[in-house]
Amino acid sequence: MSLPQFFFYVFSTIAVISALMVISSRNPVHSVLFLILVFLNASGLFLLAGAEFLALLLVVVYVGAVMVLFLFVVMMLDVDFGSMRQGILQYMPIGVVIGVIFLLELLLVAGSFVIAPQLGGVATIPIDMGVQNTRALGLVIYTRYAFLFEGAGAILLVAMIGAIVLTLRHKVNVKRQDPAIQTARRPADAMKIVKVKSGQGL
Amino acid sequence: MDFILSALDYLLGVPGLGGTQVGFIYKGLLLLIALLIFTAYILLADRKIWAAVQIRRGPNVVGPFGLLQSFADLLKFVLKEPVIPAGADKLVFLLAPFVLAMLALAAWVVIPIDEGWALTDLNVGILYLLAISSLGVYGVIMGGWASNSKYPFLGALRSAAQMVSYEVSIGLVIITVLLCVGSLNLTDIVIAQKQMGLAHMIGLPQLAFLNWFFLPLFPMFVVFFISLLAETNRPPFDLPEAESEPGCGLHGRICLDPLFAVHAGRIYLDHHDVRAHHHPVPGRLGVTDRPATIHLDPGRSLVHFEDLAGLLHGRHGEGLCAAISL
Image (cartoon, rainbow over all chains, first blue to last red; front, side):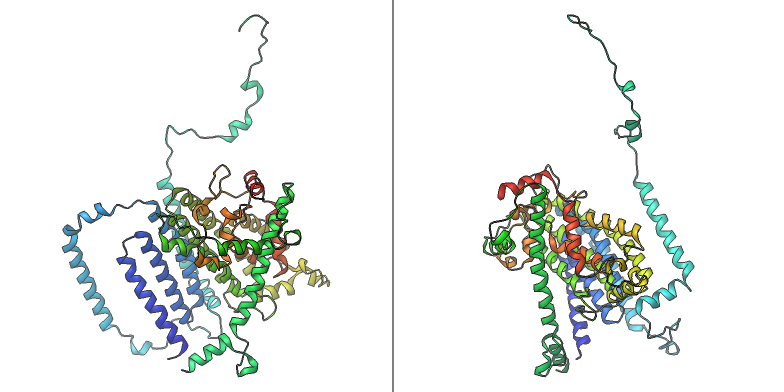
């Protein structure tokens, strides 16, 4: 056993165990924390495969951003386990059927999966082995797949704007500050100077 | 068995005793000790400078001019009785400060101290720094949530939201530097600054600060500096600890426990006890090391940045807090 092999087993064992903990732990926050552990170990596996850019990107994007949002939502929600458990018997048969079908499909795929022999060792885009990971990805993404890449970016932008539009709402009875009006106010608009004679009211 | 031997050589090797290289552990320990001593004095400088700003004396009892104050604080934390709130999620509660301190120190692995002196010369060093600093949020959220109290939790949410949002602008600024250099390796970036800097161009290499990228990318540097203040929760961006609140944000409930007391990282978390309010310094160093290598010269600029950040940091509440304990 070599050192990379040893680390492969370490990473994959921890990943599998914590993946099991994700679905078996009772506290949803613990589940999310275990999911983060799974991601970290997956990035370790990427690193072993020589894809250091992907490995660190996985950490930055998924662990650093997506899972933080998960954690936010899960922590803010006050999950009531009692009511969640109520329908469990009712949904059990459907769940079991779907699970079994999914398992069979997975087994079929895993059992019959072969790479066509004529494709072995042939990459669609020949990559110079001396080039670093990041550079190689950049060279492909910004030349050959430039339009697809830009398209993906545009779709994400539209999705973001869509989410903002969907969640933005102006309530009627909310008082809002308008700085422009406030700064445009002059003393003459705001107050009246009155001379009051002594001994008399207004 | 072969791989165990090579691994041992990598970790513990001594060139004179049959090893082929200087062990990783010794280099790491050297860096760690230097870093912790440095941190102790940065803390002291922070307290002293802020004391001066608020016309107080600051720590001046332990050692000459209070120079040993940070070490006295460390001793106090080591010897203090641990307090874990009854309703706390114990494991997560204990894990949170560990995560925070460990990540802050882990970022230093890729910082090039001198040519060929980075602990690991990753070719995606910048990405590694970004990844590590984005993980720092978890320490904050976990600590806040595990305390099982709404004030630390709200503080943690505020702090986490702030950290996550300013990551983005910091990342974008760093990309401009990457575009100029054409590499993600920190050593490459430092060397590139040397070669294409202004001082090098006008033939005055001793004016090294003119070489740094903050000059050609000045607008970006301004954005970076602002994000830096926000990321480290320094004024005017110190939302996570609201002035009017008695608790200190997410740290409200984290006190000391023997397990981590040994870990010097605890000092930084224990605002509540130090009272003179320092920000979690490992986190701050984790951020400051970025300008240290990118915009400025490694090593030298750290003090500079800490001081700048420190000077902008003053609030009534803190002054009062500090005055009570001193």
